[in-house]
Length: 327
Image 1 (tube, one colour):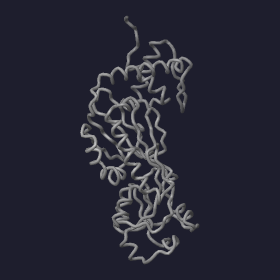
Image 2: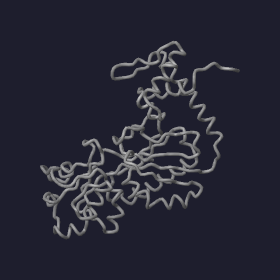
Image 3: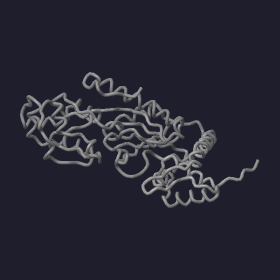
Image 4: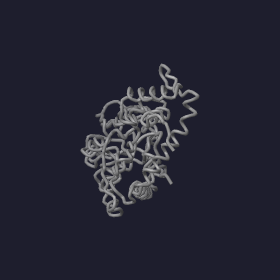
C-alpha cells in the first residue's frame, strides 16, 4: 500500500519539539539549528493545513491538533527504532561512556580493567567531560543516539536526575567529607575538634555552576556543631579534580565526595580528621538514550557498574550509612 506522508525530517522535528516544548532543545537533540527546526515545523503545518504549536513570547504550547498527533508520531518512531535495532548484530561492539572528569579519573579508571576482563567483546572508550555536570554547557542531558552508528554512547551525570527522553538510573548518592594531606596535619598540629580548623585554609569547590548546590563550608561547620563559621577566604577551583590535587599538595582543607577519595585515604595520601559529612544535593546517574538501552554492550556496562558501586558502598557502609545505591 502506498502512503502519502509529509517528510520524515519534518515529523522528527515536530516530535522532538513537542516532547521538549522547545525549538532550541529539539535543535540540540537533532544536531541542527533552531531555525531549521522552526522551518521544518512550518512546512509540516503547511502540509497539514493546521497549526501544531502556539508560539508564545516565552513559551511553546501544543495546539489541540498537535497534542492529538504527538502520541501516534512518537509511537511510529518507536516502531522504526525497533525495526532498525532488529538488524543489529548481537555482539558487544563499541561503547563510549561519558563521565565527569573527577569521577572518571578517581573512580572509573582504576576499575576499568575489571570491565575489560569481564567483557572482552566490548570495546570501551571513556570520555571525560565537565558537560556531564548539571548546569555546565547548554547541550542535551545525555549522549545522542544515532541508529546508523554501530557504537553506543551512555553517560554518567552528576546532577538532579531530570533527563527527559533518556533512561535515567540513580547510581550513587554520595556525601562530602573533610580531607587534608597528612603533611598539612603534621604542620598545624593535632585537631581536637572541628572548631580547630576554623583558622586553616579552606579550599572551595566551584565545579557546580549553581552556587546553591555546591558543598558549603558554613553548612559543614553547622553540622559539625560549630555555628558561625563562614566561607570566606581560601582558593577556589572550577574543577573537583583540582580541589583534590590542591588537598593532596597540602594547600588546605577540602570538602570532597567520599567515593573520589576513599583510595587516597586508604593509602594514607589523605586523612579524614573528622567523621562529619555533608549530604550532596547532586547524585550520580546512569543516563542512556532509551532507543539503545537494550543493546548488549549497554546492558553489560550497566550490570558491571551496579556491581562495582555495590562493592564501593558495602566497603563504606560502616563509615557512611547514609549513602545509597539504586537497586
